[in-house]
Image (cartoon, rainbow, N blue to C red):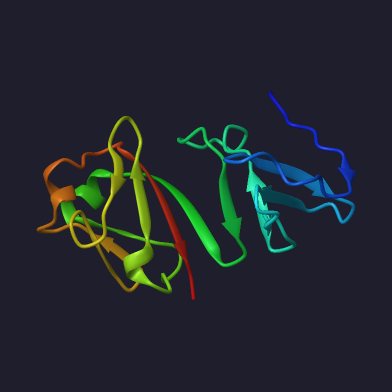
Length: 146
């Protein structure tokens, strides 16, 4: 497993033009600084970086998880294909901001074009997802819940 180890310390000087510094201050939080000296907090007490390869994730990248943000990994069943919907564990706070990705080149799916959210259900009857979703397809669903 690869890792990046950053030493806690004082903020560095501003980097050269079109460059950004990433560093850890003595408070243990990660920051960035641009050429103008603008500092941006990249981590805080409400966020966690998840190692998805260690978490049996179908997507081998890292994502940011916020307290109320849910990430569901689903393998589609034939019943879900037949019913053209799946039940989410929680109700999304903003249905239009639900992010859905398909493994194996399916890429991102789009609310209103590929699927809709109705309460706790992700539905695709009459939407683009209906034309290509099949049993055993794998989805990653990211949303903020109520």
